[in-house]
Amino acid sequence: MWLLDTTTLRLHEFFGDRVPPYAILSHAWSDDEVLFHEMQSISLEEIKDQPRYTKVLSFCVVAKAGGLGYGWLDSCCIDKRSSAELTEAINSMYQWYRDAKVCFIYLADVPPGMTEHDDRQRRAFASSKWFSRSWTLQELVASKERVFLAQDWTEIRNNLTATRDSVGDIEDFISEITGVDTKVLRDNSKLREKCIAERMSWASRRRATRSEDRVYSLMGIFEVNMAVLYGEGEEHAFKRLQEEIMKTSFDQSIFAWRGPYKSSGLLAHSPDDFK
Image 1: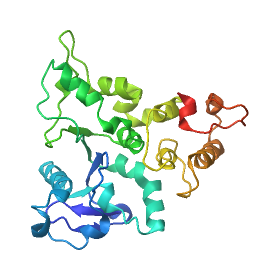
Image 2: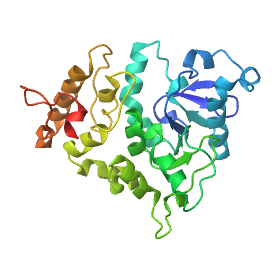
Image 3: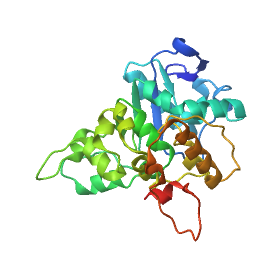
Image 4: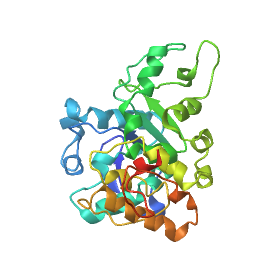
Protein backbone atom coordinates (compact mmCIF):
# COMPACT_ATOMS: atom_id res chain seq x y z
CA MET A 1 0.00 0.00 0.00
CA TRP A 2 1.42 3.36 -1.04
CA LEU A 3 0.92 6.31 1.34
CA LEU A 4 1.76 9.99 1.07
CA ASP A 5 3.81 11.57 3.82
CA THR A 6 1.58 14.51 4.77
CA THR A 7 4.60 16.70 5.51
CA THR A 8 6.92 16.00 2.59
CA LEU A 9 4.37 14.59 0.08
CA ARG A 10 6.76 11.73 -0.62
CA LEU A 11 5.28 8.32 -1.44
CA HIS A 12 6.19 5.39 0.80
CA GLU A 13 5.18 1.74 0.41
CA PHE A 14 4.02 -0.33 3.40
CA PHE A 15 3.03 -3.96 3.81
CA GLY A 16 0.81 -5.91 6.21
CA ASP A 17 0.83 -4.85 9.85
CA ARG A 18 3.53 -2.25 9.18
CA VAL A 19 0.99 0.15 7.65
CA PRO A 20 0.93 3.25 9.90
CA PRO A 21 -2.25 5.15 10.88
CA TYR A 22 -3.47 7.14 7.88
CA ALA A 23 -6.22 9.41 6.59
CA ILE A 24 -7.98 8.62 3.34
CA LEU A 25 -9.67 10.86 0.77
CA SER A 26 -12.95 10.23 -0.99
CA HIS A 27 -13.69 12.52 -3.92
CA ALA A 28 -15.20 12.73 -7.38
CA TRP A 29 -12.46 12.71 -9.98
CA SER A 30 -11.80 15.76 -12.12
CA ASP A 31 -10.28 15.76 -15.62
CA ASP A 32 -6.79 16.67 -14.45
CA GLU A 33 -5.89 14.54 -11.43
CA VAL A 34 -2.27 14.12 -10.37
CA LEU A 35 -1.11 10.56 -11.01
CA PHE A 36 1.27 8.18 -9.25
CA HIS A 37 4.26 8.64 -11.56
CA GLU A 38 4.00 12.42 -11.26
CA MET A 39 4.16 12.30 -7.47
CA GLN A 40 7.32 10.19 -7.65
CA SER A 41 9.25 12.83 -9.53
CA ILE A 42 8.38 16.10 -7.80
CA SER A 43 9.30 18.04 -4.68
CA LEU A 44 7.06 20.07 -2.40
CA GLU A 45 8.74 23.29 -3.51
CA GLU A 46 8.03 22.51 -7.16
CA ILE A 47 4.30 21.96 -6.75
CA LYS A 48 3.10 24.23 -3.97
CA ASP A 49 2.08 27.01 -6.40
CA GLN A 50 0.68 24.77 -9.15
CA PRO A 51 -3.16 24.62 -9.24
CA ARG A 52 -3.15 20.97 -10.40
CA TYR A 53 -1.69 19.93 -7.06
CA THR A 54 -4.14 21.86 -4.88
CA LYS A 55 -6.21 18.78 -4.05
CA VAL A 56 -3.18 16.73 -2.99
CA LEU A 57 -1.72 19.58 -0.95
CA SER A 58 -5.02 20.46 0.72
CA PHE A 59 -5.72 16.84 1.64
CA CYS A 60 -2.29 16.53 3.24
CA VAL A 61 -2.88 19.75 5.19
CA VAL A 62 -6.19 18.58 6.68
CA ALA A 63 -4.80 15.09 7.38
CA LYS A 64 -1.77 16.53 9.14
CA ALA A 65 -3.98 18.92 11.11
CA GLY A 66 -5.89 15.83 12.24
CA GLY A 67 -2.68 14.38 13.66
CA LEU A 68 -1.97 11.89 10.87
CA GLY A 69 1.42 11.60 9.25
CA TYR A 70 0.22 9.68 6.22
CA GLY A 71 -2.61 9.91 3.74
CA TRP A 72 -4.00 7.92 0.83
CA LEU A 73 -5.87 9.11 -2.24
CA ASP A 74 -6.63 6.93 -5.21
CA SER A 75 -5.44 9.22 -7.99
CA CYS A 76 -1.78 9.24 -6.93
CA CYS A 77 -1.35 6.27 -4.57
CA ILE A 78 -2.05 3.56 -7.16
CA ASP A 79 0.31 2.91 -10.05
CA LYS A 80 -2.29 2.31 -12.74
CA ARG A 81 0.42 1.51 -15.27
CA SER A 82 0.74 -1.88 -13.54
CA SER A 83 -2.30 -4.11 -14.14
CA ALA A 84 -1.30 -6.32 -11.20
CA GLU A 85 -1.10 -3.37 -8.82
CA LEU A 86 -4.39 -1.94 -10.11
CA THR A 87 -6.18 -5.27 -9.59
CA GLU A 88 -4.76 -5.61 -6.08
CA ALA A 89 -5.78 -2.05 -5.22
CA ILE A 90 -9.34 -2.45 -6.51
CA ASN A 91 -9.76 -5.68 -4.56
CA SER A 92 -8.32 -4.04 -1.42
CA MET A 93 -10.11 -0.70 -1.66
CA TYR A 94 -12.95 -1.43 0.76
CA GLN A 95 -10.49 -2.67 3.37
CA TRP A 96 -8.31 0.41 2.96
CA TYR A 97 -11.25 2.74 3.56
CA ARG A 98 -12.44 0.63 6.48
CA ASP A 99 -8.99 0.66 8.12
CA ALA A 100 -8.35 4.40 7.74
CA LYS A 101 -8.49 6.47 10.91
CA VAL A 102 -10.65 9.06 9.16
CA CYS A 103 -12.12 9.53 5.69
CA PHE A 104 -12.15 13.09 4.42
CA ILE A 105 -14.93 13.46 1.85
CA TYR A 106 -14.23 16.36 -0.47
CA LEU A 107 -17.24 17.87 -2.23
CA ALA A 108 -15.69 20.15 -4.85
CA ASP A 109 -19.07 21.42 -6.02
CA VAL A 110 -20.43 22.43 -2.60
CA PRO A 111 -19.76 26.05 -1.60
CA PRO A 112 -18.39 26.90 1.84
CA GLY A 113 -20.28 28.61 4.62
CA MET A 114 -22.94 26.03 5.40
CA THR A 115 -25.34 27.62 7.84
CA GLU A 116 -28.17 26.31 9.95
CA HIS A 117 -31.62 26.51 8.30
CA ASP A 118 -30.16 27.30 4.86
CA ASP A 119 -32.19 25.15 2.47
CA ARG A 120 -30.10 26.21 -0.53
CA GLN A 121 -26.98 24.80 1.10
CA ARG A 122 -28.78 21.57 1.94
CA ARG A 123 -29.81 21.23 -1.71
CA ALA A 124 -26.25 21.92 -2.86
CA PHE A 125 -24.97 19.20 -0.56
CA ALA A 126 -27.60 16.67 -1.66
CA SER A 127 -26.99 17.32 -5.36
CA SER A 128 -23.20 16.99 -5.17
CA LYS A 129 -21.65 14.85 -7.91
CA TRP A 130 -20.02 12.79 -5.17
CA PHE A 131 -23.35 11.15 -4.30
CA SER A 132 -23.83 9.93 -7.88
CA ARG A 133 -20.49 8.17 -8.45
CA SER A 134 -20.07 4.41 -8.23
CA TRP A 135 -16.81 4.25 -6.30
CA THR A 136 -17.97 6.60 -3.56
CA LEU A 137 -20.65 4.15 -2.40
CA GLN A 138 -18.18 1.71 -0.87
CA GLU A 139 -16.08 4.62 0.39
CA LEU A 140 -19.13 5.96 2.22
CA VAL A 141 -20.12 2.60 3.69
CA ALA A 142 -16.65 1.36 4.62
CA SER A 143 -15.45 4.46 6.47
CA LYS A 144 -15.72 4.47 10.26
CA GLU A 145 -15.28 8.22 10.69
CA ARG A 146 -16.23 10.72 8.00
CA VAL A 147 -15.48 14.42 7.69
CA PHE A 148 -17.25 16.22 4.85
CA LEU A 149 -15.34 19.12 3.32
CA ALA A 150 -16.65 21.95 1.16
CA GLN A 151 -15.07 23.47 -1.93
CA ASP A 152 -12.54 25.45 0.12
CA TRP A 153 -11.67 22.44 2.33
CA THR A 154 -13.55 23.75 5.36
CA GLU A 155 -15.62 21.25 7.31
CA ILE A 156 -19.32 20.84 6.62
CA ARG A 157 -20.69 20.38 10.10
CA ASN A 158 -23.64 18.41 11.38
CA ASN A 159 -25.89 21.47 11.57
CA LEU A 160 -26.31 21.02 7.83
CA THR A 161 -29.10 18.61 8.74
CA ALA A 162 -30.96 21.15 10.81
CA THR A 163 -34.32 22.52 9.71
CA ARG A 164 -36.52 25.11 11.33
CA ASP A 165 -38.58 22.40 12.99
CA SER A 166 -36.04 19.73 13.91
CA VAL A 167 -32.42 18.81 14.13
CA GLY A 168 -31.30 15.45 12.75
CA ASP A 169 -28.07 13.54 12.40
CA ILE A 170 -26.02 13.97 9.25
CA GLU A 171 -26.31 10.19 8.77
CA ASP A 172 -30.09 10.57 8.50
CA PHE A 173 -29.68 13.19 5.80
CA ILE A 174 -27.14 11.07 3.90
CA SER A 175 -29.50 8.10 4.13
CA GLU A 176 -32.24 10.19 2.49
CA ILE A 177 -29.86 11.09 -0.34
CA THR A 178 -28.31 7.66 -0.95
CA GLY A 179 -30.88 5.12 0.22
CA VAL A 180 -28.25 3.51 2.48
CA ASP A 181 -29.75 2.52 5.83
CA THR A 182 -28.75 4.84 8.67
CA LYS A 183 -27.74 1.83 10.80
CA VAL A 184 -25.15 0.87 8.18
CA LEU A 185 -23.81 4.43 8.03
CA ARG A 186 -23.34 4.44 11.80
CA ASP A 187 -21.89 0.92 12.01
CA ASN A 188 -20.60 -0.74 8.85
CA SER A 189 -20.72 -4.17 10.49
CA LYS A 190 -24.50 -3.92 9.96
CA LEU A 191 -23.90 -4.17 6.21
CA ARG A 192 -24.09 -7.97 6.37
CA GLU A 193 -27.64 -7.71 7.70
CA LYS A 194 -28.79 -6.10 4.47
CA CYS A 195 -30.00 -8.41 1.72
CA ILE A 196 -28.27 -8.51 -1.65
CA ALA A 197 -31.14 -6.80 -3.47
CA GLU A 198 -31.12 -3.84 -1.06
CA ARG A 199 -27.37 -3.36 -1.42
CA MET A 200 -27.68 -3.57 -5.19
CA SER A 201 -30.39 -0.91 -5.11
CA TRP A 202 -27.94 1.58 -3.60
CA ALA A 203 -25.63 1.06 -6.58
CA SER A 204 -28.44 1.48 -9.12
CA ARG A 205 -28.41 5.21 -8.43
CA ARG A 206 -24.76 5.62 -9.41
CA ARG A 207 -22.57 5.93 -12.50
CA ALA A 208 -18.90 5.52 -13.44
CA THR A 209 -16.74 6.79 -16.28
CA ARG A 210 -15.81 3.23 -17.22
CA SER A 211 -18.86 0.98 -17.27
CA GLU A 212 -17.08 -1.95 -15.64
CA ASP A 213 -16.34 0.20 -12.59
CA ARG A 214 -20.04 0.13 -11.71
CA VAL A 215 -19.39 -3.54 -10.96
CA TYR A 216 -15.82 -3.54 -9.65
CA SER A 217 -16.76 -0.87 -7.10
CA LEU A 218 -19.19 -3.36 -5.51
CA MET A 219 -16.70 -6.09 -4.64
CA GLY A 220 -16.13 -4.77 -1.13
CA ILE A 221 -19.85 -4.23 -0.52
CA PHE A 222 -20.39 -7.96 -1.16
CA GLU A 223 -17.09 -9.22 0.28
CA VAL A 224 -15.90 -10.90 -2.91
CA ASN A 225 -12.74 -10.74 -5.00
CA MET A 226 -12.47 -11.10 -8.75
CA ALA A 227 -10.19 -10.28 -11.65
CA VAL A 228 -10.34 -6.77 -13.08
CA LEU A 229 -10.81 -7.04 -16.85
CA TYR A 230 -11.40 -3.64 -18.42
CA GLY A 231 -12.97 -4.13 -21.82
CA GLU A 232 -15.25 -7.00 -20.78
CA GLY A 233 -18.26 -4.67 -20.48
CA GLU A 234 -20.60 -4.00 -17.59
CA GLU A 235 -23.00 -6.87 -18.26
CA HIS A 236 -20.30 -9.54 -18.36
CA ALA A 237 -18.59 -8.12 -15.27
CA PHE A 238 -21.91 -7.99 -13.42
CA LYS A 239 -22.61 -11.62 -14.24
CA ARG A 240 -19.21 -12.58 -12.82
CA LEU A 241 -19.90 -10.56 -9.69
CA GLN A 242 -23.22 -12.32 -9.09
CA GLU A 243 -21.58 -15.70 -9.62
CA GLU A 244 -18.95 -14.85 -7.00
CA ILE A 245 -21.62 -13.68 -4.55
CA MET A 246 -23.57 -16.93 -4.96
CA LYS A 247 -20.49 -18.97 -4.04
CA THR A 248 -20.71 -17.69 -0.46
CA SER A 249 -24.34 -16.53 -0.04
CA PHE A 250 -27.69 -18.31 -0.13
CA ASP A 251 -29.62 -15.01 -0.16
CA GLN A 252 -32.23 -15.48 -2.88
CA SER A 253 -32.97 -11.76 -3.11
CA ILE A 254 -30.22 -11.76 -5.76
CA PHE A 255 -32.98 -12.97 -8.09
CA ALA A 256 -35.40 -10.17 -7.05
CA TRP A 257 -34.77 -7.94 -10.03
CA ARG A 258 -36.54 -6.83 -13.16
CA GLY A 259 -35.45 -5.26 -16.40
CA PRO A 260 -36.70 -4.32 -19.87
CA TYR A 261 -35.61 -7.57 -21.49
CA LYS A 262 -37.72 -9.78 -23.76
CA SER A 263 -35.85 -12.83 -22.57
CA SER A 264 -33.24 -13.30 -19.86
CA GLY A 265 -31.70 -15.85 -17.53
CA LEU A 266 -31.75 -15.89 -13.74
CA LEU A 267 -29.08 -13.23 -13.31
CA ALA A 268 -29.53 -9.48 -13.65
CA HIS A 269 -27.75 -7.54 -16.39
CA SER A 270 -26.89 -4.42 -14.39
CA PRO A 271 -27.27 -2.84 -10.94
CA ASP A 272 -30.04 -0.78 -12.58
CA ASP A 273 -32.23 -3.90 -12.56
CA PHE A 274 -32.50 -3.58 -8.76
CA LYS A 275 -34.01 -0.07 -8.70
